[in-house]
Image (cartoon, rainbow, N blue to C red; front, side, top):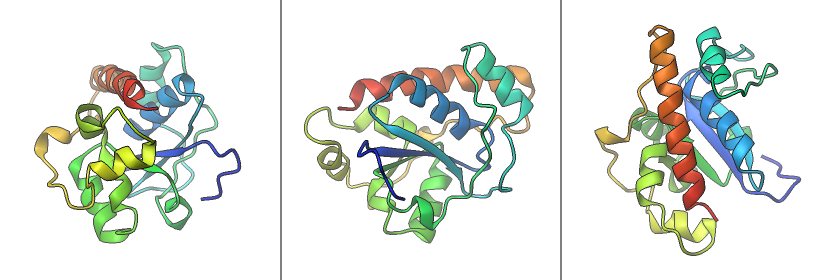
Length: 171
């Protein structure tokens, strides 16, 4: 990925790039102007807009991105500075399909809990030994995909909290 701005690039990753990674990317983008936020999925129908329930969940935060189109994680994402995944299976997918990215891929809950606060972003990520660390069940932001609007709203509230905590840990 070509980074023209020299700002660190963070890729938010979920399954379909239609709900969790979209919420996280938009929330992060609005609050962390010193970073470039992008999103992708592990099993994507390319070019689709976010789900209507995602759009409605974001409305309560007075944010949206009508231009969003889903994107499959691929070679264009390999150069990102950090991949922030929504569940353990996404990390396993990265390790299998893009092992070169594994040292820079972690779940959002793990980063919020364990990302060191001192040093450059690269140094702090490397201290986590992400390519080798055992992924655990507590690391999941539950996929709202088959749920009703209330489930999407709850997911957005959880992601909102986690994004604030992630930003607090970033340089």
